[in-house]
Amino acid sequence: MREERRMRIRYHDLGVSQDKVNHVVEREIRILEKKLADLEDDLKLLDITLEHKQRSDTYVARLHLRIPGPDIAAKGEGQNPAQALRDAFADLYDELERQLAKIRNEPFIRRARLHPGLARPQAVPPEEEGETGETREATTGGEQ
Image 1 (cartoon, rainbow, N blue to C red):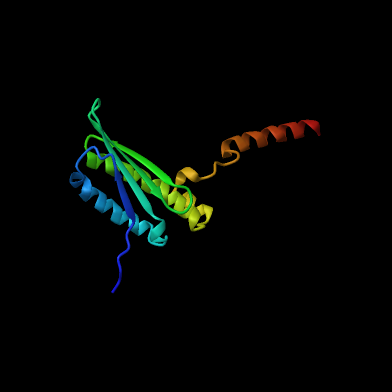
Image 2: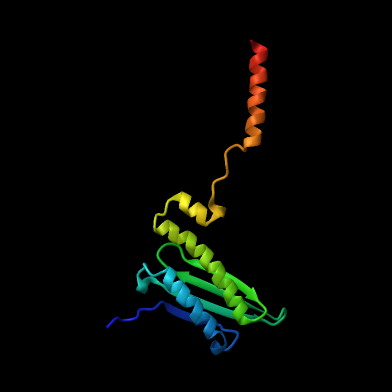
């Protein structure tokens, strides 16, 4: 018999009934648990805060994931609680992928392919290199 071990989840200041967002949270937690399958279960904790902004009539979801290494925080906004949660989880997954790549010691090239924002910029763009090379040749040619 296999014991099912799950991530610990805490809700804070929910601006809506937990029943209204439970289906979204359960779906996203299943995805998150798959991504974190190789980490110790007792180290995983997710805090969920959902609030309703009366003035703008929007919802703000904040997620705080505690895993080995730096904690990951994410925020999402939407016209309804489910939309705010989905937006926050999408932000969380982006940050989580970066951190898991570091934890798992994936090569930089693989991380850069998965996360183009991490790619190192070229030292000298090819267009500028050609111009610089022509200038040097002209200077060298004039001295001879």
